[in-house]
Image (cartoon, rainbow, N blue to C red; front, side):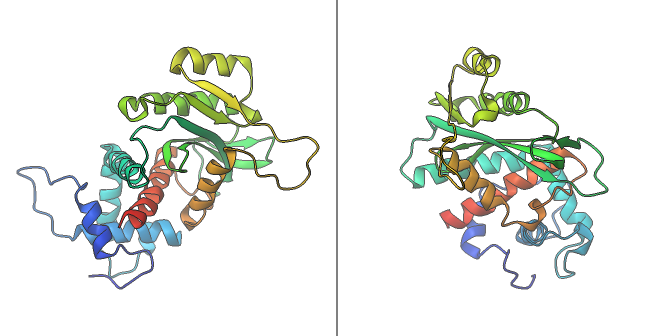
Length: 263
């Protein structure tokens, strides 16, 4: 049993999330670690921003923790867990299982010096690193995320993340409108969304006569979600060798947020 770190799950939170943990494969070696400790160790890395090797010694061996993290990334466990909690959170807020509207945006973040794959330079934001494309519902819950090089254009990244959303099928059966900012504006992109996804793209423009901070309709929802992610030090900068790992940490951050709300 580990110490009571701030990132740890409470018994009620773990009881909720334990229903979503995959069972061990039949005939395999019995588990010798507590799954609660595995979750707490992963959440510790996420929240404190440390290396896997720097996990406190009262957690299971870091290789064991990372193996669970990696295996559940590869077999889709984290995404399935995230989607189920997203469904429960919507129902808890008296919403339909499928959202009718979504909001999309991107965020460019600096990458660590040793990260070499999928790294680029965002001319607009003057950032060398990676770009996170998020699509969220009107509660700010992530539907799908895509991490690419920061040089990826808004429209190209927008197409890729919306393809992921479209693949959710029944989970977005009611979706009919996507709100975006001016970076996604353009006839080719909007026509593609209408032809491929059968959704309407609504562009929210910033008033030209206003200076300073302006609260824009709908767009503030996804900006708030980006703010939630910065609570996790591991996400303040992109330290991950693979973009897929960076995406997984975002899903895990949302899992932690949703399970705390539900429990």
